[in-house]
Amino acid sequence: MLIVIPQVFPKETVREIRAVLDSAEWIDGKVTAGHQSATAKFNSQIPETHPVAKQVGGMILQALGLNPLFRSVALPLQVFPPLFNRYAGGQTFGTHVDNAIRAHGPTGGRIRTDLSCTLFFSEPEEYDGGELVVEDTYGSKNIKLAAGDMILYPSTSLHHVTAVTRGARVSSFFWLQSMIRQDAQRAILFDLDTSIQRLSASTHAGSEDVKSSVVQLTGVYHNLLRQWAEL
Image 1: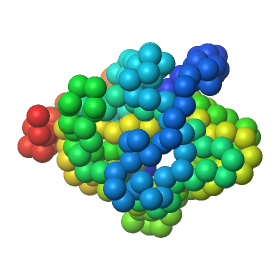
Image 2: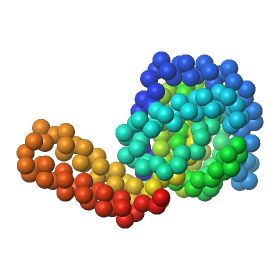
Image 3: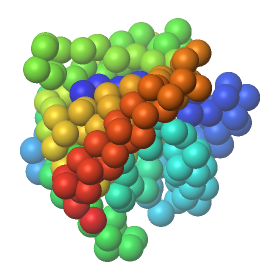
């Protein structure tokens, strides 16, 4: 399941964040690559202990914590502190799969990577190339979102970033451990939650039949969550 979270930040905030990121120190992106992906990864990153990474990462986590779509689709248990990368001058990241377990160096904390996240800080017209290509059950999906938008996709997916041949692609990337390990189960819960919200907001929401259906479906949702959740 690939889900776009639109407008995590408004455009004005995106511009402010981009200016802060551009002024930070950037290093070789291989510092956070696993053994397999290190041979395919060519980009730059901000060190994870850099004050800018902590500042903007905190803003991202705060914004996502208040985002109902993110909470509904991800059902997050733990979120890895956001990292930041930049692709320019032909840089690319070949096909790879993300590590199953990520350790945060400064804290030693570890999470299981259920979902991978990319939050864009460059507008699509600012650069050529740089598409995130995710392979899923129904084929490959090319993703190049507006600045401030974020894509969520299963960390089990093969994916790559095409070469940036003009301009610079700047983004944040990170992972999360969901309360629900299986992507198929998360999809069921997301569809159910979405249906409940639509019913609750419908023009017939005040009728006794609709009220009864909302209560019943909400019970089903929470009983499935109770059965599947790992805390």
